Image (cartoon, rainbow, N blue to C red; front, side):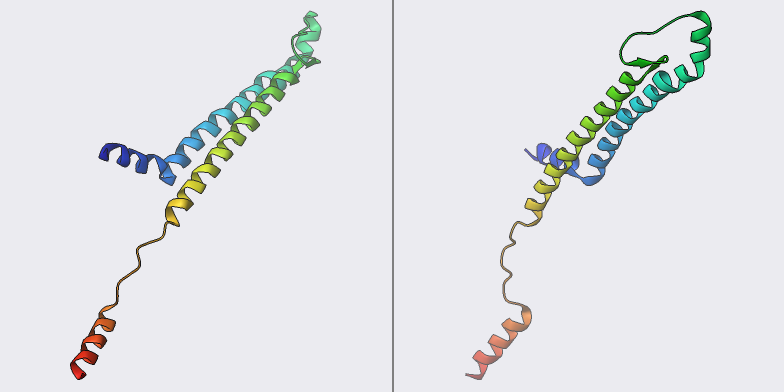
Length: 124
């Protein structure tokens, strides 16, 4: 049981979770950049070449050779992934707050209080 407890403490640490979220968000954002380059910028640069050859691309949402639909799908995918990760982090933070706010055992009397009681008892 000690192994599972250690793994739980390791996995719930802020640094591990931050790193995992950064990797996931980076991958999703990478898809946006790839789509922007492949589906928007490159066709805009190559539009004169398409017109010269007479080739047309009618797949998806296309305007003058630019596949805006693919780019929009990548943006929506990113937003969905970001929202799910936000909800996950929110739940983890709520779990951490419950652990932190657990009441501690009441502290016993301090050394000064004990010495004061002993002094008062000796006076009697």
